[in-house]
Image 1 (cartoon, rainbow, N blue to C red):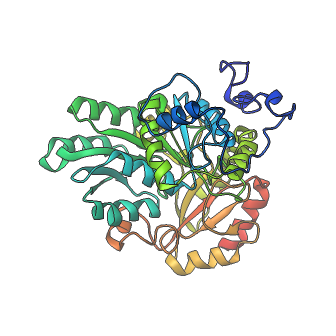
Image 2 (tube, rainbow, N blue to C red; image 1 turned 180 degrees about the vertical axis):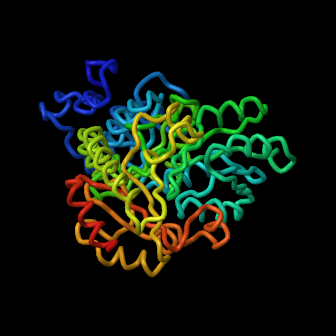
Length: 411
């Protein structure tokens, strides 16, 4: 731990928290530790380190270094910094966002349990919940995302079908419909029902700068750190934040499944954290200009973006409670269906036709045939994922250039 404490803003602490330069010859940045294993000073230390790592013993000491599948200096410094964004007790980093989600759900659910989840949700998450968890005798129960989701969860938990719900998994805003679901309201519903279910929120779309689910009652906040946290489209990673007890439980599974983040990727993410706030704020300002342009375009049927909701609506009320910004991801539906959508995608020159989001470059894609193609047609229709829907993740380009690019693509 550095000597400056944690009373400063996260963007300030990203420069030095969790690391002392004098541990490494005065190096201002943490060096990269590419070692698989670490020396024990004594056999007694080795015994204690393993007991703590396996959850068989609690210790007030910092976990000793053992083996890079269990812990590593890069991993530990990164986790110390990540948790500050949501004021969480502990964070854990993973090899990908899906590694974070799957390891978390496998750690929390046992055969006979159920996971209630909001839809739409990222296609990979939907596939794991709907098609893979049932192989472990864990049921997946979908409810529609948005302002009515807490009520749907209340009815589910009160029904015989909801008796075994162990996790309520919420992605907010939802991907790609960008609907917000009330986090604090969802937590109140769970607590009032008497359920022991844990509220897990996928915070990839707005976090950690514009939304902090832990502060609003979520037990765990999960991320694809590939997106804004990594932010440069050059790494794959995931993260989970929450209480020390829950993260320790998840880390036991991470250790044995081997889903941890590599030292080099941890080192890359620490670089990215230093510019996270200014990147996300700049992208959000640009996205708002792009959204306003699309809202007035005659070839665009509708724009789905947190900054485009009607003032005074229930969506606006949720946003006022838990959002400090609108982010930089939006979806828009073009008139003319798939044919027109593909024309737009094939004509863009500044935006990159590629999946993912949250990078420094603008990314554009077709959810129905790409990121969400694992969903069945009925669910896609229910969630508004149409042939004409395009998802846009706005980067750091000049907004005028992006608008001109979209204008010629839509023409």
